[in-house]
Amino acid sequence: MKDRLKNISHTVLSDEWARLSRYEFDYQRRDGTWNHQNREVYDRGNAVAVLPHDPARGTVLLLKQFRLPAFLNGDTAPLLEACAGVLDEDDPEACARREAREELGYQLSDMAYVCKAYSSPGSVLERIWCFTARYSPEDKVSEGGGIADEGEDIEILEVALDEAFAMIASGDIIDAKTILLLQHLKLSLIS
View (spheres, rainbow, N blue to C red):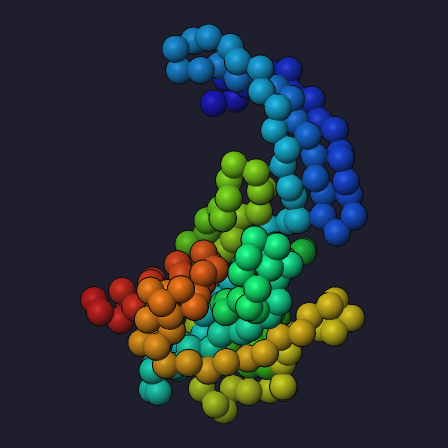
């Protein structure tokens, strides 16, 4: 693929909360012709997502929080999501454990890697490492809710897995990483 790209230039358009860059490049199509393209790429870093599951009680931990882009797109209710966060310098599993403590208030066990995926590869650089993990009521170590200094205002919800799975069909859960993790967990319990 690298042979099919040339003349790549890069201009930073914004570097506030995250970096927005404009790229210009020449791309060789499959038929051999060259095509000049412009793309804007949003880079907020890579991330992790973890869906905690209590198999004894058949529950999962989700969080509810306000998301400005969803609000601007007409989804005005806070989103129901799996716990997630920016990778920073941590390895993915350590980051997932840290985010679970900060956001959910739980120390997780039996962390299991599911996959890594792009949420919107046409414009967003972010790759998300996805995990499931086990928890029980005894694993609660704090109230959670996120870090207020980072603007986080997170409500923690414990939901029956079947109810959470049904919330995908009802449109109550519309976050892609959460849908992926709920479907993975449901399928892994069936097989």
